[in-house]
Image (cartoon, rainbow, N blue to C red; front, side, top):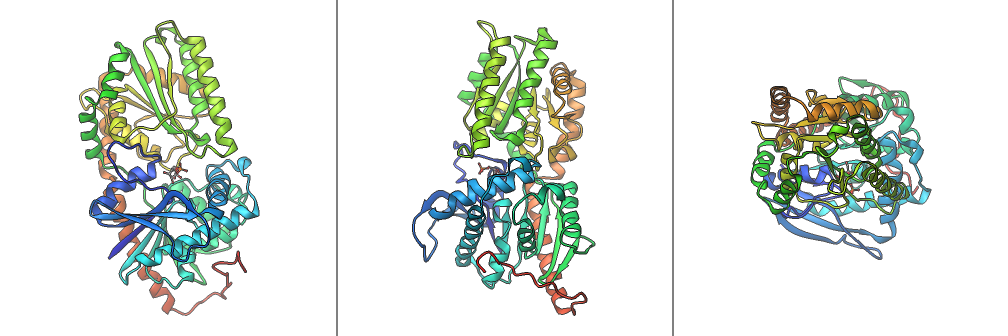
Length: 482
Ligand code: F6P
């Protein structure tokens, strides 16, 4: 079998380059090792009608990276529009932030269709396609329209929100129907899978039996595959990175002070405002922690052209400045706030330096920063993870200090507890988390999905030979241009 992996954002894997988002960081090692072709956006656009989509191809480990220029006329409507101003807010239960036009939806479908055409050149008889994330919900249906009959699977890196929220997405029904062209749909958590199943049964009136849904187009298997990290590699990176100049400078600047660290994309789903308010509260309630514990918050900008992101950036910058103004001293800054990205190597060293990792999203598919923070710790003197119970990672990392990110006082107490936790308790919690991380590594995630995809394809083929018992409700796989 040869594998083609598709995602909007990709990374070239240069050791010192920052990687934005957990998806690219997670896929990089498996593409490198598995020999897969990884296809995604080059970040550039191209004018005019492209007969043959333009792709720059380069080697990546034993695999290859194909970077596509997306169509200029549709990029904004696709990326800033439908993907990130309709789907993203809805998937993160913020239907109030949906702002899209019909044109955005058409552009989203056009880019999905464009990507399907581009993938044909990588198709061999034994190829399987693995599509990643909400940017490409309809890509499987577009591939089927082009006659692709190989296994096509999909994995959602974000949450899938409850049915009433997803119904706030324009064209939700058509999109979910298109998703059923996939042989296998994977989710991060049982809760996401249940929400999706509930949508299928309540909104589309479909019957799901033993994790499989039957439609006029065949069967689709629904399953849960919590994404992991390469634990040992990250731990090794963290040990080495301690002598990296950025990390050494950070350590020297601390003067024995304790450090909490947060590393996020600047996104409203990450709960950054509440997090800063929680630190404010903590320094107010425990003045003794002023000067003795500070926060390093890395907030990497992305999607800056979208209004909600611009507003968040201004609001957060003002709040950080107010908190620093209130609690700071001539020789002490409570919050070091950075709007830039760091390489995985430097991040590993920063995590190891910090006594507390704060990962407090309001909603998150998994959150690999939580896993990376744990993997980066010194086994003899590990730090404490303060983790939102609404991050997918909380299902596995249940010996972290779990917090409700809407409860500012509760978070303030948890961070203070983390800062003073005795070594024995820190070690017990950390060892339990490491055991879970080792059981659910990125390699296991990859293998489990690919194996399940082959099985799901075989099930679909077998089902196609059986007579259809229910009257078919014949959906068009692609009706936007009809
Ligand atoms: O699943 C989250 C996600 O959309 C991923 O596709 C990506 O890792 C990350 O967010 C980065 O987002 P963007 O590419 O829009 O900056």
